[in-house]
Image 1 (tube, rainbow, N blue to C red):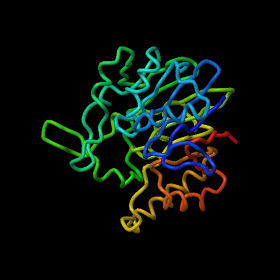
Image 2 (image 1 turned 30 degrees about the vertical axis):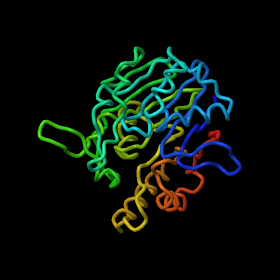
Image 3 (image 1 turned 120 degrees about the vertical axis):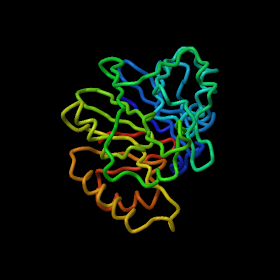
Length: 272
């Protein structure tokens, strides 16, 4: 199995890859060559060329949620690869906002012929499984506070029902991948336990804990530490980047130690 961070907010040292605010991960399994997300632009395509990834061979694309920094490369990708199935939640293309700014996906994506809309849990095959419907709100990321969606009564806090997670089963191990974990990593893992009656062996995900340094309250910092302590008690190894942020990562790393690892543009994720 091969997992490569095609694009992320930072680059590893001595790497020619582009960094941008976004996320795209390339995965090769026994049966599939797939992408989780496509970054904010066509930059992930340029990085794929640098990294020797042939996007024409992709058979599957998973959109983790309906924000531009994860879906912005879908239209450019569709000009290279017209056959890969693109799985997204059925409300992923609805408008989403950060304050007044629209951070939703390009609605032209809806015109692509190979979009597969998902509403409930969905088993693609013995390797790939998708789930959403994450209802818990414990240690909910405060980075969501300004994120909104349209309702019949005007804008309201986003409920992130457009977020889905990918579970890959390979060689007897389970790998859980999420884009930003807007619903909160602990709530995602609670939902995972409902489905699988266990915890995954590995998690690759942003944690959506980033803020400008001066914007962190003591409550925010306490929540980050408490989240890390709970994750550290699990028999799961975590890989994170993108929206986690350096402040949160440093706090969590001190607590989780070798159970937490960073990802950067151009990195191959080696599952320990």
